[in-house]
Image (cartoon, helix red, strand yellow):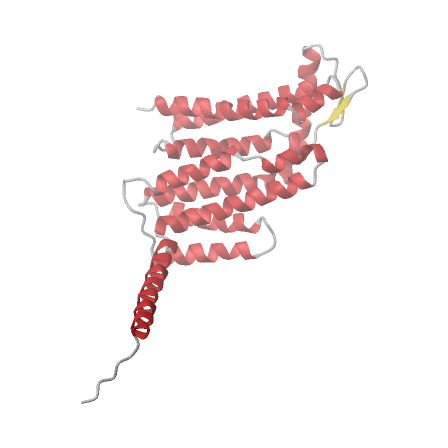
Length: 301
């Protein structure tokens, strides 16, 4: 009989290699499991990508502004953030687990293709298609209906509302500047109106441009209003629609007051357009829609 003795180091190396291979295989399986998204995670990831496009738009818009306005690149849109929180709350609620059908995945995948095009507005077209589908074709699933409605509200705020405003901006701006001029005359500001230019007695004047219109704040108000309703787990009713109307009217009045306060001097313009006054106006605008909406939710039967 011949005994063949191999060095102990050979067995040690083989054992270590087996252990390491098993460990690597286990880590690979764990990584694959951690990267796997459930159905709710797919919808949240799509929502996050949609809001990321909006953040890029704000970044590019701020980069084109003067140097003193670079701080706008770091602004967080409260309405979009609130919408994301609402979608997360709806999908992660304990009511029932979200289950997507094969058709749902096809719709989501097809709409996600709009992210591949260079035009930044196209993802919101895809979100509109997906939103209408989940809202109208999945009415028996309240969670998917809420997600679809919020996607539509985001798309209206980011794309459709702005597109519509480009068509009707002329009469809206004319109406707003006329109201501001009349209010200024009644309050003793001594304003005169020349087209869309508000002239102050000291020679200072302010143009009412597209971005100064309260129309954009109105579309944001709809997004905030709907997000609050979904966070509360409620449905749209007459009292909540009345709260939306009241909030939009207050926002229009606040915007007119802000423009009026810009007219006395250049210092006043810088304060209310770019300075602390602009931040104060943003907070008041958010409160103008949040307060009546919250009140209508507390008064529900």
